[in-house]
Image: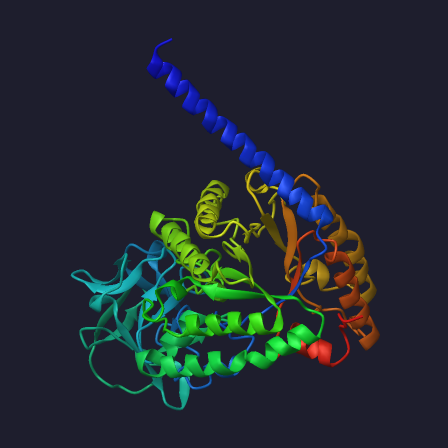
Length: 515
């Protein structure tokens, strides 16, 4: 054997030994912490603070003009003249027609808001409606001036609209076979005017960070968001947390925080200073901090809490979205690694199984883990399970078990499924004691990563529930989720919906963590 071959063999052997040691050490550390540590996270999520969720604080949107037409709002247009719905033929890539008697996907348009009256229209195939040489088509991949339209609403009936095209003319449907942009007159708002459409706004519009900042616009959004950050969560909240049996907070953040104070539009700067304050208050009151990348570039699930613009799931489709996420994780870890209150970093929240491939997610988790370990050897690294049917709750175990200080995050809600709609209070409690307990036991093993119920709530849809039922339901979850080897976190501290607010639940005697 040559010296070069011998050297390569030696190097390869050392590499393999290091990998084996690292894997064994990871399993040993996780097992030791799981079995012997006296510290378990009893946390609350600071949801709706640094990543907006409009249902948590609806008043945040009150000052937006035309606030029913935010980014991602889905609308359908019915011609009053013809009596049929406008559709992107074939879902996109060709003309617009007005020949549908009922409305579904091809007849639905997602709005990208430019200002309170000006929008892009995104169709089913994710292309945009615009003016081209051959008329009104849905062909553009990225919107520009030719894809910019104004929605003119009738003053006394805002469901009746005209759509003004970039050529100054209005869309009209003179025949059901083609929508054109060549109506120049006023002609009134009656049913005989082919430029008049009835606009239906579908339920479920997004009210996230993109919607609130773009809704207010660059002049108003900075002050609105600064006021929100400075008042929604304050130092006294950390005192309340410390005095009521909690020892940690999970703080959702958006990927744009890494570019503070000048994040990409429409996001505005200032959330990083608020996060800095949280660490100061955590230090003062002895609270551990879990940083959670709740909103990733392109959105990992299409929900408003992921910073989505229009409900599309585009995270992981390009290398850029992955790298921006890794960069955000590294930025946050580097910034707080020396702070004794940093306890864990969650690499991403609730990736959706229908749009995020497992191998893509695992590659990102490895890169995110490496980014954390560049700056901290003691912070736990949390990996969220994918949401969606058919997902193996242990699909991340092989990866996580070979790394040090890793945690698997699962979210348990007795909501969002028809099976809970008919359950009695006792059936809900039994489901927690039996099904949730079994689910958690399945993934809480002595040789795997730690387990974390990162989101749960005492909300339910049980009919005729008494105050005693609600207390029993909350206590059942506390008992079961207390079996998670890393701990749990309630969603969320403050909320206009009482059961979703841990503060309200504690103050009104439904939950007591100090006994």
